[in-house]
Length: 333
Image (tube, rainbow, N blue to C red; front, top):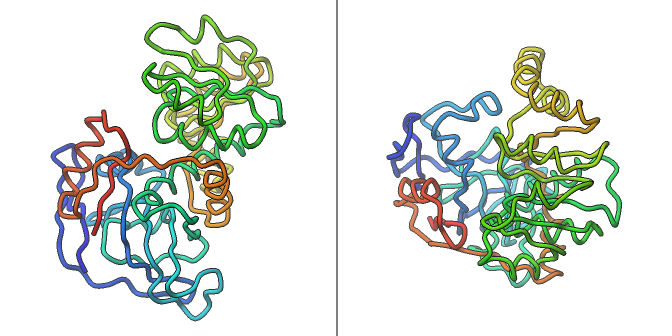
């Protein structure tokens, strides 16, 4: 089968080679999936640059790709959750990525059925962001209907899933981004939109219950400033901390490293009697199925950008780095 393989780490132009490799071996709880489409994400470029090595110790050569949609062609002896011929989607297990290929062997617990109405290309853009949104929302300590949540950078693919999933939980959503996306964001379920070019959210927001941070860096502390005492900020970009290491079950060394790495955000939050959380999305087929069912019920459209052949995997990663795409880039093996 054909697969896009990262030969060694480095910045763009990425050292990705599309070559023939053996089909993956099927374990007793695995499904063999014929990949029909694979989403290309910022995490893929981060992996290629060796920026997530402490979170996932990958070794090159490495078949790339974290999310896909396809059809089940065979199942292991102990598989019960999916069947041959079923259309499925998934965020691949962190320790077994490899979506940029014609076939993938995937633990059945990572798989979710594709809702009617979504094509393979559309489904391939939803798995990682829908799961990230669901897992981030689960970390909002003590959230209940009527609470406010600010979604920073809410006009991208993550906002497109976070906003409707938050609204479905009864949360009042405020999002920021470029003005050209305002009506789409409001249609997704946001009650208020802040144009970052004309308004500084720190000047107009106070007493917010929760924040989903998609920006990271210095914006984390600015976003802590708009939250009430006792609020929780969940970051996708700020970096891991000790709480994340304990939650994910890392050993003593990584716990110590992440505790030190996240100390500046933990201290800033603690000073305001708030919580800082970090999320690095993990596979969960059941949770994904629930999330995409909500998206389908709310008629949330998947925004597919350029659709490229597998042979252009390196170019796809470079385009993700460049940004500006109207939708998520998809590879078709």
